[in-house]
Length: 381
Image (tube, rainbow, N blue to C red):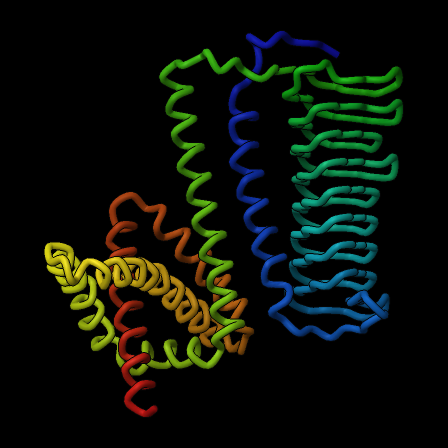
C-alpha cells in the first residue's frame, strides 16, 4: 500500500464527484417533492404510509415507490426509484436503484448501478456495478460487496465491506475497518487523514487531497468556480420551478388541465398571443411609468408580468411531460408529467446555442396558452 502526497493526486476524480453529487441530490429532491402527487397501492398504519413489494411479487418493468416507509422484498426486472422517510431494499433489482430518504438500508442485490442519498445510508448487500452515495452517515458493512467503483460524499464514511474497483470519498471522517477490502485505489478529500485500521486491505494507492485554500485564484480554479456557480443557480432555478409547478397543479388543477388542452388545440394561436404579450406589455408599462396617474397601475402590472413569464415555462413543462407519457402509452400523474418535462427542459437548455432559443419559444407558447385560457374562462363566466 502506497500513500501519495497532495501534489501527486489525480484531479479528475475529485472534480467529477462534486457535480455528480449535485445532480444526484437534485434528482432525489425532485422525486421526494413529487411523492405526494402520486397514488400507488399502499396501506396506512396509523400515521405511516407503508409501501411494500412482497417477497413473492415480481415487477417486469421499472418500479416507482414512495411513502413514509418503502419496503422492497420482491424482484424488480427493471430500475427501481424510491423515496421516503425509511427505505429498505432486501429484494432483487436487475436494473439501477435510485433512492432518497431519511434512512436507507440496502440489504438486497442490485444488478446495475445504485445511487443513494439519505441522512443515514447503510449498504449490506451486493451492487453489480457502481455505487454513488450522499448523506450524513454512510456505512458499508462487512456484508457489502460492490463490483464497481464507490463514490461518496458525506459527513462520515465507514467501509467494512469489499470494493472491487476504486473508492472515492469526500467526507469529514473516512474510516476503513479491519474487514475492508479495496481492490483499486482509494482517493479521498478531507482535512484529516483517513483512519485505516490494521487488517484493512487496499491493493492500489491511497491518495489524500486536502481542501484548497480560497486564496488560490488560478485560471483553472476561477473557471471551475464559475461552472460550479452556474450549475448551482441552474439547480436552484429548476427546484423552484418544480415547487411552483406542483403548487399550481395542487391549487388550480382545473386551470392546469385547461392550459395544457389549449396548448394542444391552439398551438399557433398560443405562439402569436405570447409574442404580443411579451412585446406589448413592456411598452405599456413604460408608458404608464411616464405618467403620474399610471405609476400605481404600472407597479401592479410589473409583478404580474414577471409572474406570467415564470408561469409560462411551467405550462410548457407540464404539457411536454404529459405528452411524452401519453406517447409511451402511460397515463401518468400531472406531477410526474411536470417532473419529466423539467428534466427534458434542463437537458436541452444546457446546449449553448439552441438552449436560449428554446427558452424563448417556451415562454412564447406558454404565455399565449395562459392568455387564451384566461380569456376563454372569463368569456364563459
